[in-house]
Image (tube, rainbow, N blue to C red):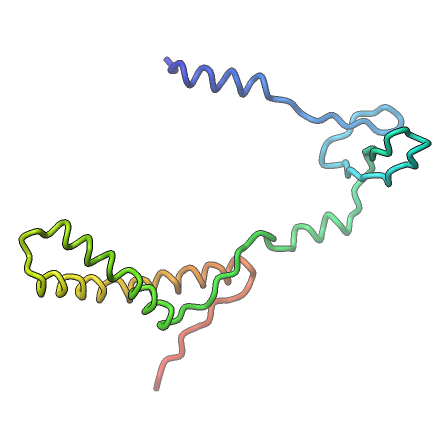
Length: 155
């Protein structure tokens, strides 16, 4: 049996479920795939009264439909290539926080032991951070349609 929260959510979905109906000039209903909505230029203020734009339904252009499928997503945030310099800076930023965490969690440790633990965490953190940067950069390249660089082996 669904909980009260689930029932309310389902009822809300049913209340707000709607679909667009497009009608052409002759009065025939059209599928949303067959319709392209264009905004007309605002009419002169004297002709309409308020100068608002109206929407009309027309058939889509074939070239516009084909071009949209080939383009990659527009909202992809660029990812810089991985660099050891940036990773070392990140390690330097996180080092005090690591030392603070070790100080709070390891109360029985002496200060040299706390510093040694922090260095050990940084030795693990820095290469792992570089690998994560490299993974994200390669994923970004695949999203924009480029091949990730291949690794050159030395002979």
